[in-house]
Image (cartoon, rainbow, N blue to C red; front, side):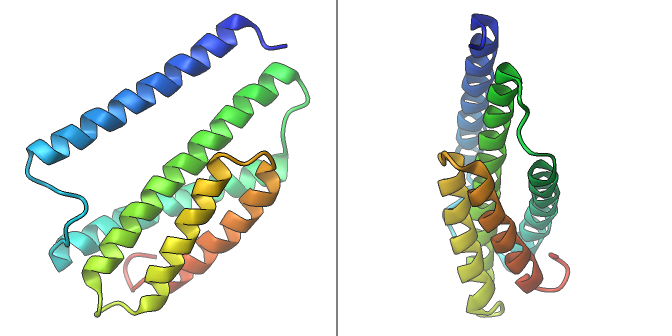
Length: 156
């Protein structure tokens, strides 16, 4: 059984991540940026390039995690499971942003990468709460590879 210090630390990290995300969202709104609005093409392309870089990095982390597997020791396995869910949640957020930016570029960007981003985000959302991380991670790896292969020139 993991000790209370481990559980307290994970709870603190989760709380801190939630607070930082809320603060960033408030700052964006106060700065007059609404993430749900259509962006100018240059902004959308720059955002998509940045998101593609984060998605590639997340894809590498997923591949490494699948290759290494979960640790045997109980506390280490708990920490790894937490890290797995954080990675999936981060990827879901980046996929959401990529989807919005692709939508801003439509019709200059075809519908295929837009739909691929939407489906990959759903896979990441499911993975963040999945009991079977390895199975869900393999599906997300496949979805990310497909999306990154369909992104417009410069983003992938």
